[in-house]
Structures are given as C-alpha cells and as structure tokens.
Image 1 (tube, rainbow, N blue to C red):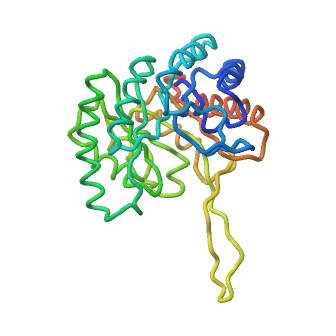
Image 2: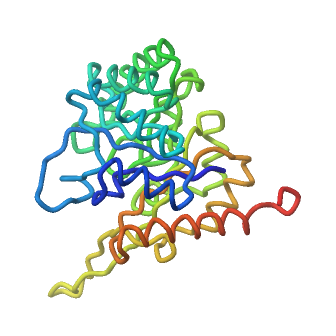
Image 3: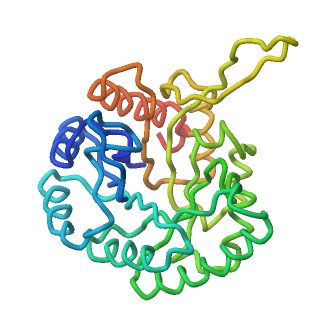
Length: 287
C-alpha cells in the first residue's frame, strides 16, 4: 500500500508547504483539494484552507500543481474534487484536469439526502453518473464515488447499487473508515467484497460519538466528532486486516480532521501509525 494525504486536512499550509512537508515526512503521495471556498482570516478545513486550489480558473493553476507535485517527489493518489455529479461543466473540468495532470482518478460528489426525495435523487444521480462514466472514459481517467454520511451513498451497499453495471475502469468507489463511523457502516470485508472491482480508493480518518448534556427528561443527545486515528471508534487495525484479506494494495489517503495535535506533529505521527498498522496486520505469508 502507498500512503498519501488529502490537503483538506492540512489547512494551515500553502500548497508549496504541504508538498514540501509531506514529502519530507516520507509520505508517498498527495491528494489536492480543489474547490471554490469562502476565504477567512483563520485557516480552516472547509473555509480559508490554504492548501486548496480554486475550481474557478483551475486551468491556470495546473502547471503550478504539476510543478509542486513533481519537484516534491510525491505522486498523485487522485484529486479531491467537489463538483457534484449533476454539475456537468464542473465535472468535465475536473476530469480534464485529472487527465492533464496524470492524476488518474478524481472524486465526484453525490447529492445530499436532504436535497429531495431519496428515490428521485438516486435515479437522477445514476443518470448523471452514466454521463460521468462516458466522459471519464473519453479522458482516460476514473471518477470516484465516496461513501459519505448524509449523501445518497453512505454505505457500500448504496454505492454498489449506484455504480453497478458501469465500467469499473472509469467509475469506482472510495471506501472511508471515518465516514462509516457516522453513517453507513457494514462489516468491512463483506463491504469490500461487495464492491469488488469498483473498490478504487481508500480514505482513512476516525470519528467518535460523544454524549452531550442530558436533557430535562434524561434523554442523552449524541453527536459525532472527528477524532485522532488512534482514538476514534473506527477499528483501524481491523480495517487494515480486511483490506489485506480482500487483497487491496492501492492508495490509502489520510484526512485527519482532529485538532488535538499541531498539524506537523499530526501528519508525521499518522504516517508512522499507518505504516505500523499496515505491517502488523499484513498476513504472515505476505510479510
């Protein structure tokens, strides 16, 4: 397996700093975040993220993205796009950029479940994804559907239903440990087997359910929060054992949205931890 970082999780670093720091720590690759975002004085994961490239005018930045990535010695694990499947212009631009950079694969986001009636949303997304698949094939790249809470594809089962019958050379699924803590978790090995050739990429982060203050009647509200890899509810060792059992040997992209540790310490420690977990969960015959 090879390990990369999604720059949504490195908001304090500029693109040049992200490439230099991650390469210096020994990461194999980088997954650039590409989206138009709200600018803020204080950098954050979702707004004011300094390691994000804008979708508006993206074509003018491709040479710089390519230069920073190449000079750092990092590879692309893919591109972290935010263009939704029904935004055909945005998707086309992301697919073209993926091909131009040689990044091979790019995330295409799915509708949120609160955007309408589920069956209608799903049917429309399937039609859009058929178009996406055809365009991805034209560009020679792969479009990725992420397992993500609060969207129409929170689970492997829902994602498989969406992509089933499309060409797995040009449409794939991102399995995501942390998102599945919040919604959509199924037994990991079974979910990987269900996806089969559609399993194209893996994201690793962690989350935990936290109890709030009891209400007047004693009801305890719970909320999900991002957590360090070692401290969340997701079983990282079990996750890697399942990946090994399935035979997955592709990219594992870390996107740690916890804030207990400073960014540089967090990314460095995550790489050490992920490599240790990957090694100790590897079947003996493959060690």
